[in-house]
Amino acid sequence: MKIGITCYPTYGGSGVVATELGKELASKGHEIHFISYAMPHRLSNFIPNIYFHEVEMSNYPLFEFQLYSLALTSKMVEVIRYEKLDLIHVHYAIPHAISGYLAKEIIRKTNGDLKIVTTLHGTDITLVGLEPSFQPLVKFSIEESCGVTAVSRFLKEKTITNYNIEKDIVVINNFIDSKLYKPREDDNFRNKIAPNNEKILIHTSNFRPVKRVQDVIYIFNKVHKEIPSKLILIGDGPDRSDCERLTRELNLQKEVYFLGKQDGLPEILGASDLFLMPSQSESFGLAALEAMSCGLPVISSSVGGLPELNLHNVTGYIAEILDVDRMAKYSIELLTNEKKYKEFSRNARNRAVNVFEKDIIVPQYEEFYKTLLC
Ligand code: GMT
Figure 1 (cartoon, rainbow, N blue to C red):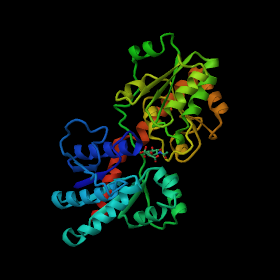
Figure 2: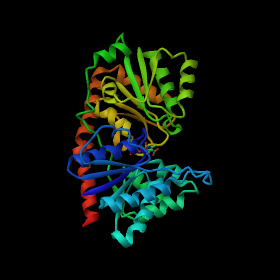
Figure 3: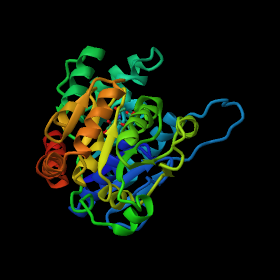
Figure 4: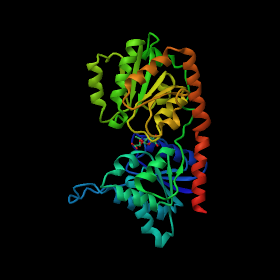
């Protein structure tokens, strides 16, 4: 198949899923054309069957605001026409799904009926999509997509109720490469971060308010009072400065490492002990899946799709959002009970491998494409 993929190329779950999906499909012989404003984060080296088409932006002075959705539409039209795509798969509805719809209408007379597949990832449905300036557009573009997938049952239900949609939405979960994301004995990393054998707690995100990274620090503050421990924070975003300030206020600056955006995430996760995800909203929680695949139990909030991923009292613990006391208590309980910790760690790894491994999930996308094309 010849497939166009549009996603946000920056650090973030939907871009990661789209890029890894494209790489997997390319390795199976499909021809993949990424269409976006920049090369996706995980595509920097040459990969056979993968092509990248950059959306060029005009700087015309009359346009006070950039017209990205329209420039994206034109680039989609160009790629559909000249590369003879079978379908375009857009990740994150806003604005990609409506650009796809427009492109499909523009080429209809010359190229026939192109299939647009939309994957809903999270805040495109639960947060920003509900704003009055986007709501009608999101509803329309979902209804007009040829096929729609959501990354969890929670997100599917939210889409149906929030937008009053009758269309069939197929749940295809996020996936993981469990050979890359695996438990590791990285003594070098451990010795540097935790030279006195401290426990390592870790959180990765794009530091947006929905991630509640401040709560990660409050949880760690309580854990650290009971157990010799260190906290690693990976990623960057709007809340990072506030988090650094909070760390200093709590006098934890020697215990908390802000490592920024990291390419060596599997190695760091694989050498850590416990993953914290106290999010306010999380449709699936890809970052938690990456940690589970590395054998880390997860302490998370109960929002969104997290209970579908992190099984309470099996792969980790779940607490009400904002309940940092309980999340700290659960963390301490696991880190002080070796037998239980090992059991949870094994369960987390097994669940990642047996349920969310890429070889299980990627064929679901392929099958979905085939049903739309026949
Ligand atoms: O929806 C977002 O906030 C952005 C999106 C992203 O690009 O990071 O994240 C969502 O998509 C991920 C991949 O499907 C999911 O694992 C995340 O749970 C989801 N984030 C939220 O729902 C907040």
